[in-house]
Length: 636
Image (cartoon, rainbow, N blue to C red; front, top):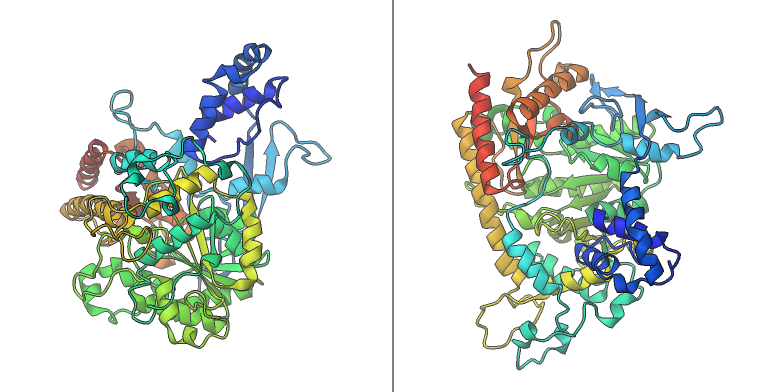
């Protein structure tokens, strides 16, 4: 919750007249939050006179209160397979180890309470959740951040996957869409321009003040379904022309992590394994372990690709060729067996597609192999496609093949799904083992509004998903705003007045105006960074999607300790230590804050994710200069 809202809520609850207003302060939405701030702070007439004199001193006192801190140490148990860690999350204090996620135990000491009867002020599970966060985050929070006036030598934040290049497009649009426009079904078909001028007259529609459907308002789910049909190109497939997403399988929740956790909660038992190809988004470990109690088992891929089988790419890219990161049947089998050896049943294969942190899409052949493997093993395949609308290279430059094809599209058109006995005519015919999550945090830079979506055609989990979503619903105001945003027509189109809102034949603001401009801006930034990396002779993966590039800075790692093996044979402790030295040097001496690859379980040290959209134009230009300075200084 925003600080101003939190303070206002504390002040309000401290008054003796606390029943004067409804206590609906849980909204995670920026618009609703500001609305509550204005009502609780800026309009004192809503309080009785005797309350007005009490709340400001209480707020000031509450803001000065600090909570006790806790420190944690952790021990991990790691099994090895083939001489390498066969494990998941580690709670060790290294920036990234190849240890286990929930095969670890932590002991805590608290400065405020440590008696013989045990800690009665907090639970071990709550304290353990904190230990799952990547250690590099504490380093990033501690460093002085760049400011053009107050901290010109501060570190440039290039590690948080946010897109800060869209405010000029988004802010006016969201203000417009959140102004309670008249619903589409109330618009006169003969006068579509009424859409811009008519208001219902108030901040809320009357039905927004009451309980909502836990899995999302019907209008929003339909609008989201239509939007996903477009960006995933489900309606363009010749074999899917008569199939659409089943709206009953859509669950709208407060962010991608919330719906992903609920989905995995419904598919697994505590202690089951989730297979994740490396490198992967570091926060998956928190999202799936903290409450769901699952075990993250990395799918290592590099050693399962033979040299010489990809001659052209291997000759051009060497050790940084993209195919080294592709999961295949052999790597999946190894991870599956590894989980079983540890007594954990593999239940989920989680793919990030387009991939975070690599900034690339998996080829269709790789996705199909994963789908077939998952169906054979009766393992649920969950595809996180949160960057599906940020694919800026639509076709492969050499083969012409479509860069991104959704798991939903490929699973629906594969031969297994056509004969699936679980398909009853609704939806795409995915069967019960293929699932999908998405959010508007990346493609629309709306991480503050908390809009996530899960989709599944597994009917056994629909009611549980809907009920669990009761704990992470999206506020009604945000739902109406997003419904409007996803359904609003593309302005300036000339269709003879035959626009039908939300249908596949019409042009929409979201898919035909905003996203193309977003792709243009992302592509320009990516290309600019790639040009500088090429100039500096820094190896990197050629990105085609997402907000970042994957860079190989291993050239600048400290030397190997005496007697330490090189490559994949290097010990995990040595990898972590050497990368941490480089990470801190980049951050503290050159003002470059990247995401370290070992925090994302990369198999080798010295790789970093650079989020090129997380800065203003001036900051991005400065970042490029600092990269050049770093390379020059290190190569002297």
